[in-house]
Amino acid sequence: MTIVVEHLALGGNGLSVMVKDTIDIAGYATRAGSRALERAAAASEHAEVVKALLKGNCQILGKTSLHELAFGTTGINHWSGTADNPLYPGYIPGGSSSGSAAAVAAGLVDFALGTDTGGSVRVPAACCGVFGLKPSFGRISRAGVMPRVSSLDCVGPFAASMALLIAAMQVIDPGFVAQACPADLSIGVVPVAAHPQILQTLDQALARSGFALHPTPLPGMQAAYDAGLAVINRETWNACGHLLPGGLLGADIAARLQAAGLTGDDELQQAEQVREAFTREVDAALAQHPILALPTMPDYPLAVAQAADTRAAIGMTRLVRPFNLSGHPALSLPLQGPSGLPVGLQLIAGKGQDALLCAVALMISQRLEQQSA
Image (tube, rainbow, N blue to C red):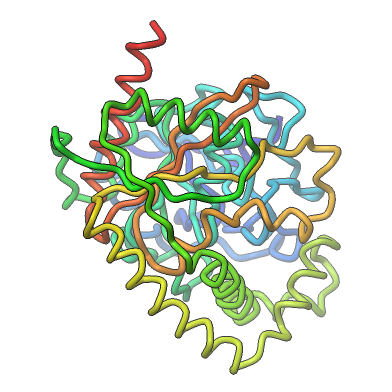
């Protein structure tokens, strides 16, 4: 079970945590799950978010595995090893923050940190049956996080409960203040194409949540997904393209990175126009209903044996990637479908409304738990 790639013993005696191996810890190399970085020099200082963990008296127990270069959705890594999915054996743990989600699902830590550029916290959270939060873009410092420059990427926590997820946010963001859930809040339900059982599972959970529900279309979702891919391709090429000639990248990542290098300036300019338009669209929807709801993934997780083609699996991020482009906070809440496989309920809030998002997710999870008891 390749969840931990570096065992550590740093910090105090508070909450236990592991961090994705794209986050610098002084004295240890940041290898990002790649053979191409096997001989990388040790980081000279902690990432800002690691400094926050230590200031918060957390116990840092290890660095976790991931999809190579954080550039994939399945979590499969033939060099450093693929994390087992503890709650759903034989199914992918999701990517790219696979090890962090699996560490929480396995009960190894109180919470774990991942990064989310195109769903890389929310997808593993959904696959592994845990909670995962992509905070508002820019809320958590990315200093000391790979890639150094990104207009999409966010550091975010995983936990097995909303209470622990909120505790994690209070550690990594001193400005995060937990709040009560408003009693009269309404949720905008975004209609999307997805597996019928997933839609059924979400409909039932939302109906039991007690909140007023209103259909709230987001017509720009597909354009935002395509634009998000263009941006991540160009930014990953800028950050990692120099690794390609060395011939040490996995075949799946090499092929995707080679294709990413073809992203043109015109495509990127169009993507930025879509970013502005979709952000306005989401903001307008949230002005009507403070929380939006939709599936985290359009289908159940793939079996590991079916997930060899990374590029073919990119569509798993169809419902999450748009909110990286827009920068809104997004959270995946774990459910289970009739098949017994995991389903994620994705909740979206306004920029800076991370505490509201967590309060609503806490209320929904508490109500669902009480009704199933």
